[in-house]
Length: 380
Image 1 (spheres, helix red, strand yellow):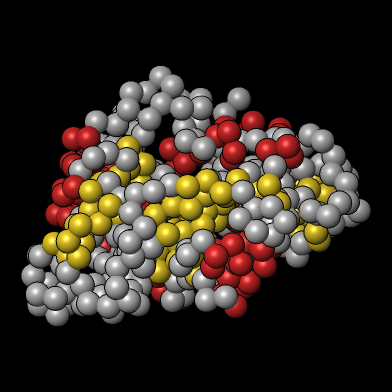
Image 2: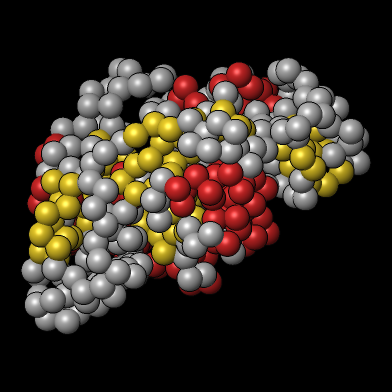
């Protein structure tokens, strides 16, 4: 049974039938089928549900002849991170971000690095609770410039993510989506109308990989990337996790980076990150640093102006260079920023070239710290 068949089987099971509670809310994107089932229309999985059944993502379910979200206001935990950890290198550099996720996922990646959260089928995983207003207040109190929906995919908790983003905007805090980009057209448009930045996980550049390793389709992700680039003001960057022997060939890297430049433009940053054996893919070795260096070189040869390496110690590969004069404008060592040669609005101090991205003041000083937080009674 391949990944897609397993996911279809999961969607057809009851898997703890939902009931109305304080964390369950109605949703908009679904329609009734002639055979009595209801189809969820948030993502291309198009789960078809009978009464009491949950979708592949686990958190969207059929209840009282509608599709509901069962995790509104619940989280698997909160943490203050450097924004570069998302990774976003051209969005408020040096600032801190309040990160959180829920449970479940609409993909089935065999190599998932957050599988304990994204593959969870237990509501008990969602041990923390926070309203949108509580999250916005916590971000302000903790000095975070943004809130990130991460650890699992915010597409599946669409309504909660949008409400959190709106509450954050009212407090001057920005919203960041860390996502695989696997979402249908109409909810995609609504979702990104509320986001300021995104990191899209482009897992590979072959349909075979997406189908057999992720239970998804590449074309939908490419369409999300095109949509972000050509129809929204959302700042986005791309992450490509390289798995030895599966998606790291020169041929695939050339194809992917050439497509990025041709369809999205040369200024979209691409992060090549290292795989470590996890979840259902423990038979592959960790990604050698040399593979990331090779990928970065290929990307730059094909016209990607801002190519980065991640999950390894590589000061050169994590630093940002001016597209005009080649000067190091943001020096990074892991997540610590050293020399910073940009003006408050993102111009190179050497030649005046504008660095693409979001810059609105001096570089932040958060550094590499990662601090878990608990929100109790509305306060961190």
